[in-house]
Image (cartoon, rainbow, N blue to C red; front, side, top):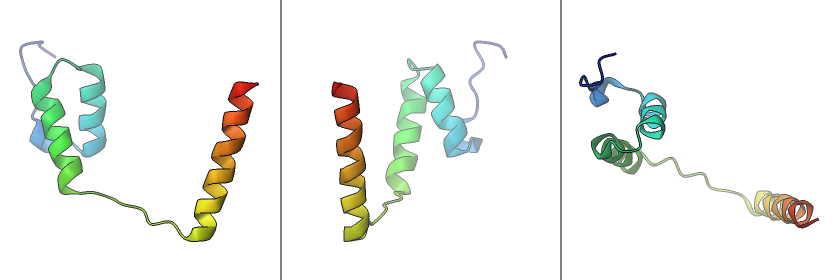
Length: 68
């Protein structure tokens, strides 16, 4: 691709845009486009109390492993 040619950010999937931003960190327009998409389509995940306890336990075990 010609370096002066910028891809059309509007036709990229969110995954493609994320990959592009990671490889073109100086492209603030692409970063803003990705941030706008993420903000426009949040994908929150609600955890049940039982799941939260498992996540805390797993996180605690990983921390202990890293410290050792």
